[in-house]
Length: 316
Image 1 (cartoon, helix red, strand yellow):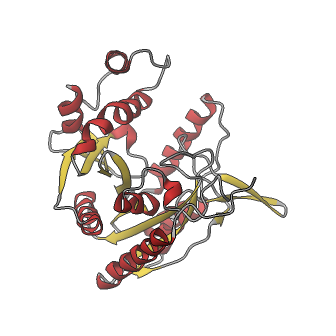
Image 2 (cartoon, one colour):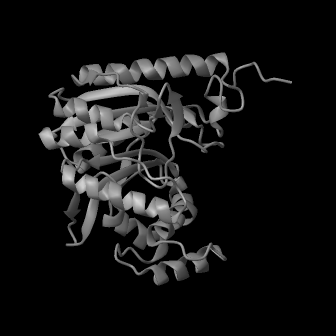
């Protein structure tokens, strides 16, 4: 038997419509322009943790985007000023209570600010939407120190492996340092902060900078100028003080592809249009992507995204 009825009831569908209207009103009040960019593009992402859907398009293959980031940065380089977008995004092989391969993303970029300032803006917006009294800000290292007793970005792999084994029991062998960081975050830190409300985590290890600038934190340690927003232990948003150095990002894409090859994943050609845009000049800016479906689930108290989507993966 097919499932034809929507997962979200009429009340939740009305709440989604109201949320989208409120978000657009927020950006209109802050004079941030709404834009649209393509969902199907010539380049995918090199990040080993992400996989694009591939779509045959005549004689070429295009990629459904995991985020509108690359195209929005091209707009920024062309002089758009502050911009936002609410759009569909896609990740292959992600489905579950908190994941749907097709999802709604809110992404915005602000000129002339860093990731600390944008994190505060995210905290204000999320607290207003969820009617929460406020938020906490933790550095990545301080949070890991608080929960796990170690917060060193430079902790050797063996030390992290021993810590994970003590906390979690048997773990997969030969995980990379960043895999162990991710494992500890998802299985130890996130459950611990589930009762902390809105938590903004800033200054990630340098190896986890992704597309953020690399900076020196207040403790004199190299780190990525990146932040994440968690609500009740659920990851909601990921933001960067953006790196605009085309040569630096090209090197990072190459490093990603080397790791993909060791894991048996296909390499991804770099987005040359993005790199050309950065070479032309990306203005100093910070950007963030926020999961709208998760935000709505938090607002309604839903435990599964199926309850806030018209037609989740199993119904589409």
